[in-house]
Image (tube, rainbow, N blue to C red; front, side, top):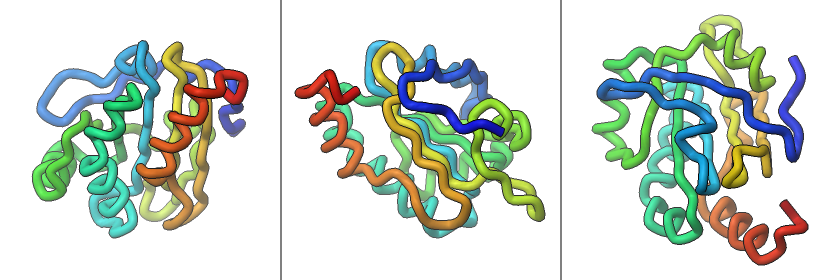
Length: 161
């Protein structure tokens, strides 16, 4: 299962969205920096903290032309409850096939119970991987303030993309 590399086009994924419709990646993020957060599940305290922090930072992320999406293997009801509890203000996907996503993106998978480990991507406005963070366990993930600073840096220094 190869990991995505810097400069590689993010592979197309269609993910059911909480509330209906689909999240189409990377197309829904085109024209903006894209932040993709794969979280372990609503039960994970580290994921809850990360998602809440990104929701609180959404205005600052918007200022640097960044859009955020998140998804997990959780079913729609569980995902909707998380969105409400954490007041998430970005699209959240649900019911993904862990093995299919792992094959496409190289994310680590927990076997029992079966879920994706925390994985994060920053995409350029044309859908290329600018940064990838793969975690094999509970910690090691994108942080909202770091993402904002990183996007500011690569915007000012395009050669760093």
